[in-house]
Image 1 (cartoon, rainbow over the protein chains, first blue to last red):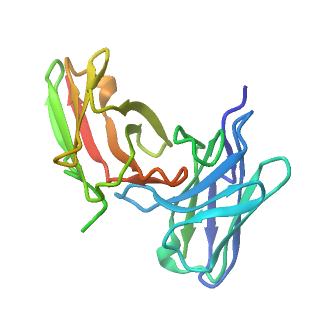
Image 2 (image 1 turned 120 degrees about the horizontal axis):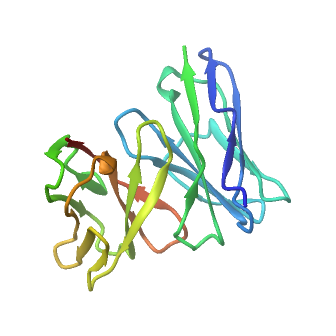
Length: 113
Length: 110
């Protein structure tokens, strides 16, 4: 039973570029949430997708956008990258949008130079 | 004020020691509470949920005090393998959004 998988594992981008990160949820899960974890900090909620729609959003600018596909996988897009966007981006899946037991993927480490 | 606050540590303890982590949360409407464990450069993993009645899982005991908006985690008989960052996590009950503290780093030494 595959857990949550994310790709790529590491990424280096230049300021101003755009990036797309991908996530496949745990088998049987239909809800995906994205978090940003800066060095030395706890993860910060970006948004949650369920039934291919954004259901909740944290305090992140519109440069951060996402998508969920019919197979429940999800993408996180970040436009106009800033140095401060450098972080570990974590995807978490759950069985339903209100279920709080979340399983995390190993994350994508994004470095913006 | 941060929504969830933890002492960042690090806590350096010898094997066999008992160590306690504390956490406070600011919103009294918070509904669910958890402790997650995160190893260096890895993803967070659920350690245990926290209930008002308190709960225990082997060497780990979690307590919740809703009146004081305070959560604790006690680790008895520390093992080298307990070395990690422990994250205090709160859910507001409005969907699956989890609010994390900054984490407390634990290092268990031989």
